[in-house]
Image 1 (cartoon, each protein chain N blue to C red):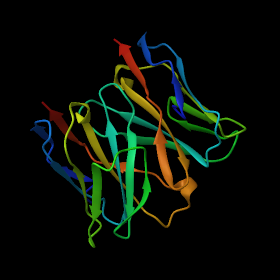
Image 2 (image 1 turned 60 degrees about the horizontal axis):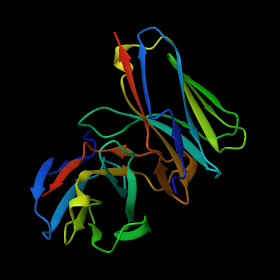
Image 3 (image 1 turned 180 degrees about the horizontal axis):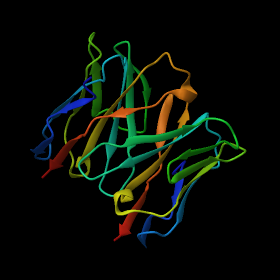
Image 4 (image 1 turned 180 degrees about the vertical axis):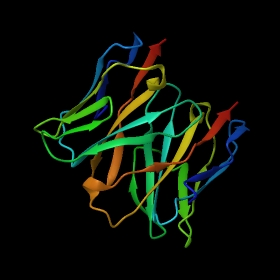
Length: 109
Length: 116
């Protein structure tokens, strides 16, 4: 059973478009993190959200943690080819961090 | 400030063999977690080491074992390799004294294991 479900699995859009990817669970997490992973590298942390309803912005990226701390979304405005990569959400529970399967994003120039 | 370093970067083994992967955590970090990432999948938690002991374990068989040394570096050992063990093995370090909600992982680039 996958505790963290990410959707969509794959997304290919044109440069300049907006997009949203989702991370959902039936379980409550103490924190939720988003990572980006590029080929041949390990995941790199983008943001951590810890409070239900919290919204964080990182330039063109907006992250939201659901009120019940079970889900999160990542919205990218005016996507650029450099945004291409695997986006992973990860939930903190019992001093370990577990990951979803990821959304593979491809931005076409 | 060196980040997380892993070795080797790539290796090829045959079924039934044993493998040892190594990880040096980021300076200042004392906790090491190991993840297995199959092609096209997210990382799956194997186990976590703190104070030289296994503190948490995911759903992996006993063929997967580990060790943490006094300098916080760690090894992952896999015995009796199966074809399905082919994956990218990621090591991540963190600092134990942060609240669990604020704890974040710093990953190495991984060791890619191919089992033939």
